[in-house]
Length: 379
Length: 252
Image (cartoon, rainbow over all chains, first blue to last red; front, side, top):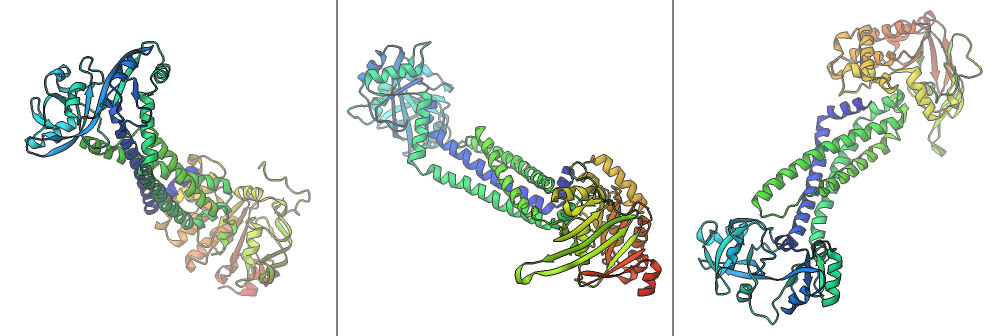
């Protein structure tokens, strides 16, 4: 009977294609939307992936990485003095305009790291040497920045190219890999002291203190000790990432906008597939009635409908996820669109698609359950 | 069979396939309540082709539905092949139909998207047979009805007469003792109609089988071994032989 159910489904090519399309579009909308959301959220905390540290010490009022409320320079020493801290280093983070060779300017995220330890430095250099950051006026620019800032030269930035930051010379000594920032500006790395020269002066300039627990110690316990000793807020890297994501979820319209897209995807799936499946059931009502007359139980026919619905769902889902993966591949190649397809997203889409299938099947089942076997004698 | 109650303790008289006594059935409710069957009695013998005839709306299709177990009577006793249909649950009647009844419908009701052989195999698939075994058996029955060369065709590629023969093969594939036919020739021309009735008469020659045909097609009356005539929800006359049928209605 299962084979019969599938043959009935595949035989009605127009409706079969329609149902597959409905599920496919629903899958694309839901998966793409969720992947965009995950991508945007990952961009919000990109500094955390570009400046790797076990512990982040911030002002007590800070909830997310983009919110820099300056600390006192002495806070670095206070953190270092806490029992269990292996090391601590200052970090400057600020948005600045980079003035280019042709007079144009570009917004950049400037990261200042400790010149001695280079703690928080980029992990993957594409060109140049990290140690050259200690040279006068040296900056390391990320790949996206090399492309964007190099537009004034009509090519990508090379080592030795120059531009201005707040009327100070900046010379490229290296190009690194870095995650894209939420603001869209490239990341520039320099030493903390030089960042103080580039950045507009304020009474306090220290954005964060990064630190690490001594080997063998629980970072959470060390974080608690630092917070108790200094009165500052201390996050582990993971805590800071989730705190940042949660801040954007609760303080921006991003989840509502993208959530609406995902919800619309679900509705599209239910509307197209449910309606087409119902039409498919209605069209087969005489045949289903004949099956019932010939002794097929209501349960068995409902099983046939569920099989048909789930088959359509899984095929449409497979195609949809494949399309999203391809789109993601090309979007990531472009590098300008936030896109993060973690396994939980296709898994969630699968659950949603199966829910669509269940709803579609239930619509059909409600009809089939009411079929009287005697319907076949009433033509 | 486990869900079907045992055969009645009052077995039908020898040679009788089914017996319906004082059957009542109405449709609608309140002021729109329409009685369709009024204390109708009906019986059929093993090894006969019984015609159930009458004008439109007289209740013959309703009676066929009740004796086939697809419709529940409001009152009366229905003994079919020794089973008390009136006392069975819906699930038990469904199981009963799958094992003991073959159906031939006016519009054939073949599934258009599957092959002729797979259509014929449906009753066996409902019983839980494997697709390979069911299809092999279906092909053998299709040979018997003269459609051995059409097993892989879609029903839409067959003529009306061929489609009805496929439906007959489907009704026989699980060798049911009772075959019910609802206007089996009404969608066919004279020649195909006569061929179909020849086939049904041959089927009814099996002493362990009964064929009940609802019709108002006078061209096929002479195929009946007996004829029950209905009017206004009751059987008013039963013609007990082919000769009596021809004598009463002529030969068209």
